[in-house]
Length: 306
Image 1 (cartoon, rainbow, N blue to C red):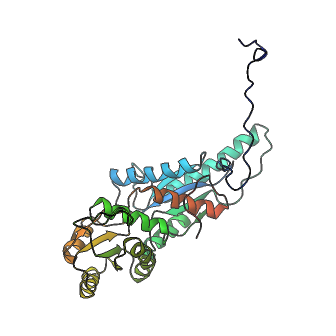
Image 2: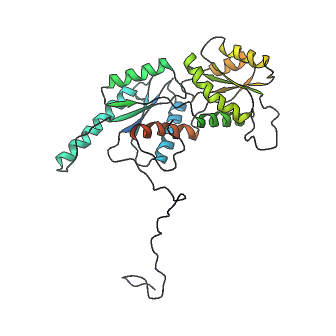
Image 3: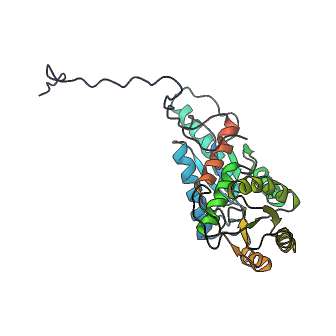
């Protein structure tokens, strides 16, 4: 039995495990630094419960990678009732930081006056969309908050992985090239659909090359919001020998206008996979943009700075 002061003689004493050294040492847990700016997710597109659920799940993934992270979600087309606008979220975030400083100061604590951004704004966009990015920048300006805006999430190998998974979930691609089985409906040509014009198509093309390497089939990008773009790429793929096409959205989801994906699939005469949604890589890439901006690296972060 143990005595109040410790274990009885002869019983083993539990000692702290020494920190493992060398290249296989486990990384030390990392939490958000005290006073770090909030991560504010800028969500484009029409507001809806499904959009809110997706944004909350993405934020949940980011917080699980960096405990203690202060977060917010601002909607580009919000109404400040159920869906707060980006301007409102940023203004409230800056006000909370000032309030915390004033309370600490009034309590006699020695605290430094807040410096740097109150928030880091990460657009929930896989690829560049100049129109949406202009609106996000304007919202940051209108909020009058000290906030820093990051780039979009892609191109990135994790996005190629996410598209691959969505295709395999739809039965349009094998889940793993190494497995010796085939999928009867597997496509032999992929149209990678994006929004945002020619710049977005070029950026999607980089992820398309990574996806083509994973699937060993041709992948070509097209702008789903440009009339005739999907049909032209479908014709080009068929002319090069692809008989069974699939449409793969290079889109998170909220930025995709309702009905546009179905219309594009009909235009191309092929089946379509789902948008990327709250695939875990999306949350990790959101956090990667935040941590890269601040120069911190959470434990086990799968997304590496580009």
